Length: 314
Ligand code: NAD
Ligand code: UDP
Image (cartoon, rainbow, N blue to C red; front, side):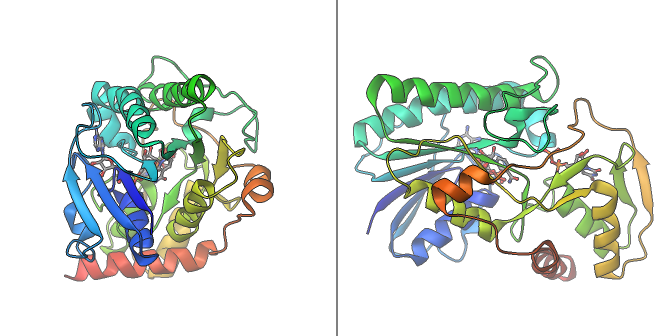
């Protein structure tokens, strides 16, 4: 049984990770400031003897007892509407959070995994994106608090590794969806499903020809755990996601079709610096982790629609 700390443990991905690790009989502590996270996500494990929740902001040093084997650093708002509402806090969360998490990992001599992002590549000029691509990020636009914060966090992780040989792991997560996404989160999959289930207009930003590649949450969580358990020589960065690339228009039509919705498409202005296309090169994940996504987009979407149908009906 390992003792594991998960920052951002009450969020969408963090809560799935907590549940997976509890199912594997580990002792799990979820740390979260509840900015975008919700305790309801942890309802099924909150009374489990191996689970504990700690309300704390990663921008402040960790002053609690420490004997963790593994730390997953997931704390950071991930949806554009949330990080753009609190841009300075988002930058601090990535940068100060990285320092505090790494100091804590050093005290514990624990493995530490950073949840980085495909936003490292910004509006990419290389397609699909391999980890060797340095990206095309606007350093002062409305997405930079998130993109540059995550880039700085990667830089801090690798410098700490070079200086102290701390066992770090860095994954770059591409768009992930599934049950327990916050309905008010504003991300495209949850927005479209809720709009379609309520027969409301489906909101396409821009012309809808921009693309994303969508990964089901169960596959992603498996990838995070594989990365944590990978050979000490595997530091990353490693892309995790799928190569199922769709335009946003295709996604909207698929959701409307599956839900048999009467919704119409409406077009709204494209937010600034919205990446035109995104798809991971997954070679490194296959070679280094023997990991690849397994859930088809149609199956993942059905499970996610079922989850939101339960919420909309209740
Ligand atoms: P989320 O917003 O649901 O979860 C983030 C969690 O971090 C929330 O519970 C929030 O309350 C917490 N948090 C934010 N600031 C904090 C702070 N200062 N101190 C403590 N807790 C704080 O987002 P998610 O989708 O679960 O994303 C989790 C991680 O994965 C994030 O780091 C995100 O950047 C990364 N990521 C996610 C995706 C995706 O598609 N879901 C893609 C790329 C990267
Ligand atoms: N998007 C959209 N309608 C929505 C929400 C998002 O057309 O209601 C678009 C958004 O402009 C972007 C894509 O869908 O091009 C993915 O948005 P999301 O916020 O889910 O993720 P990210 O932009 O961070 O990849």
